[in-house]
Length: 191
Ligand SMILES: C[S@@+](CC[C@H](N)C(=O)[O-])C[C@H]1O[C@@H](n2cnc3c(N)ncnc32)[C@H](O)[C@@H]1O
Image (cartoon, rainbow, N blue to C red; front, side):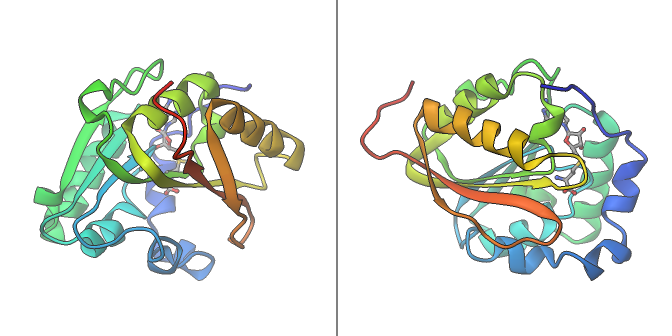
């Protein structure tokens, strides 16, 4: 799988009002991020989806944001502070080889992977680590940009996820994207 991390300055484009013409982040995450939830977001960039999710989970919820780029996380936290949402957001900067989420085992209600998986070199490890953080039956929204990811590559990603123990339960229609909702299989323990 290719390894290419989007440059930090692209982060500004990703949170620009122009992007909202194509994506309404609130509509995309509303079915998943609910009051009081703990959400894991891998590759949040500057927080296009993080801030809406932080509003949805409310004061009792948490968004755990893990990114490889410090500049993305710093900008995300500046935006969160401006919106009065910093206390609901936990951030972590990773090397890219591991999410280092052992301390979140079995506590995540929903995970968001938006336009990030194609940038990760070891997808199997990524899905395995996320799997350990999820409560049984928890959902993952996976969405990859058609401009960077072929349908064949997306199907390969789904195959990896299924081998680990996720069920693919839906294919939401998100503009310019290949998207799927995965569910941690209730009958499997942690792998
Ligand atoms: C194309 S941006 C998408 C940002 C955000 N999800 C959005 O849609 O606005 C991809 C993000 O994933 C991050 N990223 C790339 N590889 C990663 C990895 N192995 N672990 C965590 N984050 C990663 C990048 O630094 C970047 O912030």
